Length: 264
Image (tube, rainbow, N blue to C red; front, side):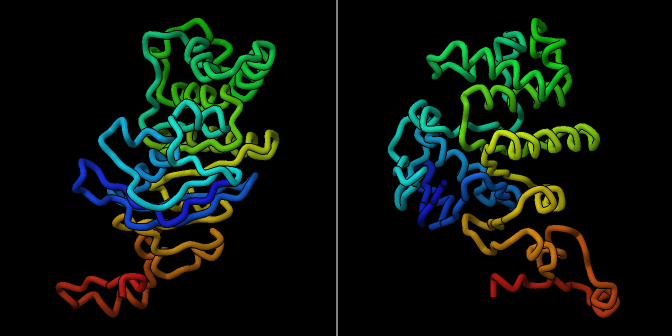
């Protein structure tokens, strides 16, 4: 469905953020993009959604194809109409609007009013609390409820692909569990493809089927999530799992810092 081929992104004409990354997102799949702060994950989503130019960023090389159509030169609204929607980091609700008004913003590009009403009912089926609070200003919702609003808002554009930027950020564990359960339902029942950006590697690798790991603007590792969970470097640097024998061997070394194999 989505093919990113060797893209480079520069901010303010001088800062090279993405250094020739390539990745694929198959139709109907859940794909995770992992990495630490500053790795380039959010910039990748901005490049796909077409909003780089609004933030002094430029795509200086490579192509982005969605359903075999190159979209790297499309405006953001046209990309939404193609079937790509984004759930931004930090929720980004319209705080002065009600819950239902926030949801309707997601349907701005749709002419089919009956379909919009049907999908609004679908969203409140997945998130019943939003039906209860439909007329309430979104600013007064809890963090978890606001995250439900922005996921629902993304669904209202009738997307084929939803990109989620750190959806677990700042939420309680039980709320995260509920939201990810619903995201899995949406993927299974609606056939909506999900591209997940997460720092919580354990959560992402258990949720997605395939994963990419980014460091310093490059893809350094990819594979099926079951394989990534067994990778020693992923376990040590992303999952916090260290072999007891290794810990004992290096306990007396004052300045030990293991070098990641992919940087060798």
